[in-house]
Amino acid sequence: MKTIEWKDWEIFCRVVEGAGFTRGAELAEVPKSSASAAVSRLETQLGVRLFERTTRRVRVTERGQQLYDRVAPLFTELREISAEALSVSEQVSGTLRISTPYEVGSLHLSPSLTRLLRLHPDLRVEVDVTWDQPDLIERGYDLAFVMTNTGLHDSSFASKRVVLIERGFFAAPSLIRARGLPRTPQDMDGWPTLGNAEDRRWEFLRDGKEVFSLQVDPRMRTQNAEIRLKAAMDGLGVARLSPRYVQEELDQGRLVRVLPGYTTSPLKVFVLMPARKLMPASVRVFLDVLEETLGRIDPRLSPPRV
Figure (cartoon, rainbow, N blue to C red):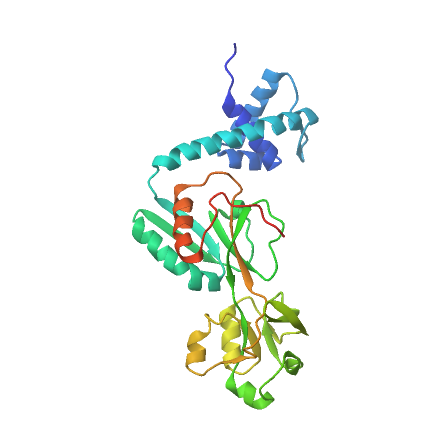
């Protein structure tokens, strides 16, 4: 029986996924010429054409797509088996790459990251600050924390909600003096507001139930809570922020909580990772550390519900 060149099959799968030999070779981490040769050998061995090639594009044939659909899951399972075998005895080292919004990183992740690095001195961590939901594969992140008013965008990544961030309404004493202290949410109609990119209305809740919805057109929009905080302290408008985030300003009298008898919808924080059953040791131990501060995180992770 002729020896099966499994590397050729794997390269074939990468070329399909990359929609061409250039990107496919990058995914397979081989030269483009090697990728082309591997596919040619496989076509000769099988006696079928796997790709239609023109000077402008490469397109997988119907038979090629059928073979890919059957073979690709097998390579995925093999990689998972290999990762599982390595993770059992793998020393926690290398670099863990994380993306997170600033507020989540500063308020919720910093203690966990400090503990993680103390427990595993050979591990390095890179933290990028972003408010967007990144493509983990394209950007090379192991984990991404996403903060949203509603739910996640449709995603092929595994996800788990890890924390809810309480929010309230805050303004500078100077703005309160100029406008008068509001007694009801309706009293805030016409007030200047400071919001994020998604803010179109602010919900006012009592006992978890919405009792009023205020239409807002913020005079400043930014995902950066620090900028909204400083603008609120300067009297430029009311900001919807986390009480924990503004505690120092409240203690020093630079901000006042407006309508403290009401709450508003919390921010939901999700952790995303590439959709796979198994995970590197560095990710696993970080999730274990997070459990100590943020509550239970299911290590299997669940698909997003939008």
